[in-house]
Length: 427
Image 1 (cartoon, one colour):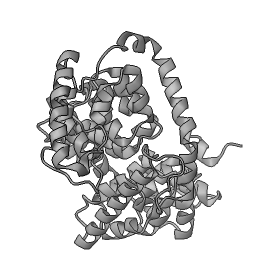
Image 2 (tube, helix red, strand yellow; image 1 turned 30 degrees about the vertical axis):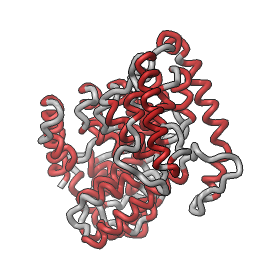
Image 3 (spheres, helix red, strand yellow; image 1 turned 45 degrees about the vertical axis):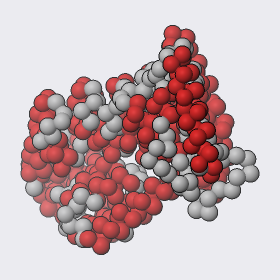
Image 4 (cartoon, one colour; image 1 turned 180 degrees about the vertical axis):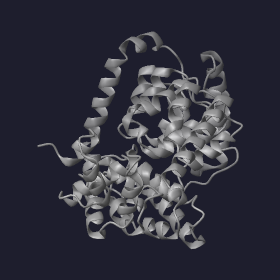
C-alpha cells in the first residue's frame, strides 16, 4: 500500500482526511507526519496555512528527531532551516546535519537574529567552515567581540589549510608541523601517487593541444612587473632580510627575445656580483620562482602546475597558454582558498574563470561562486548562470555594482525581488 504522503501528493485523499493531515492527527509515523505537514504547507492552498500553524507548535522531540536525521527529506530539512520557519531550538541539530546544505546555513548566517548567531557560533560545523564564517561576519547582530573571535578563527583555518596542503619544499625526512594531524600525514604520504596520476591523465587528455602549443614561452596575463613583485615577496623566507631593490631580475627574464635576455642576464650578473660583495649574507639565495618558470617549456610548466607549490600555482594560473593555466585547477594539492582567490582575479584567462564552476568541488563552494559573479572578467553567460545561487544580500549588492555588466545587474535585481516576494508569500 502506498504511503499516505504519496497518496496526498497524487490527490487521492478525501477532504476530511486532508483536514486531519493538516492538523497532524493521521495515524502515521511522526517522521511521515512532518513530511506531510511540510508538503501541505508549501504546496496546498486550502490546507497550507493550517499545516504551517501545526508545524509551528509541533512536538519538539519529534521535530528534533527530524532535524538531526540525515535521512529526513530535503524538503523537510529545507523548511525547518529556512529563516521564516526556523525554531531556534532546532538549529544546533540542523547545523550539524550533513544533509542540510551549507547554502541554507549561509542564509541564516547572513541575517539571523541573536539566538541564531549564538547557535551558529557554537556549531563545530560552522566554526570549521571558512565560507560560513565569512558570511557570518556580515551579520549585523554579530557583536564586536564575536567578530574578533570569528576573524581569529578564519585566520586559524587559513593557517591550517596552508599546513595541510602538501609542502612542495619538503624533502623525505622533513618534520611535519606540530599542528598537522595524523590524517594530514596520511594525505601527504599518498599525495605523490595522486599527483603523478593527475599529471599523466592531464597530459594524455591534452596531448593534441600540447603538441600545438609546445613551443609557447611563458607570457603571463597582465603586467609582468606586478607578477615579478608578487613572486619576489612570496619567495623570500621570513627569516631573510628584504630590501627595496631585492628582485629586479624577474621582470627582465620573462617575455623577451633570447638574445636580449642573454644581454640582460650578463648585465644583471655584473650587478649581482657587486651587490653580493656588499651583502654576502644574500649570496646563496635561490633563483626566483618566476625565473625558473620562464625557462620551462609548456610541458614543464604543466608538470609544475600540478606538482608545484602554492606560490608556483599563483603564477602559473596567469599563464597565457590555456593548457598550462587550466592544469593548475587539476592539481590535487590546490585548496579551496586558492581558488577563491583565483575566482576574483582580473588578470587570468577567461577560460580559467569559466572552468572553475564546472568542477563539482568548486561549484559547491559559495565564496567561489560569489567571487566569480562579482568578477567583471568572468564571461557574462557564466555569471548569468551562477546568479541564481547567490544569497539575497549578495544579490542586492550585485544589483548596484557598477563594475559588472548591465545585464548582470538587471538579473541580480530581478532575482533579488523574486526571492523577497517568495519570502513574503510564505508568511
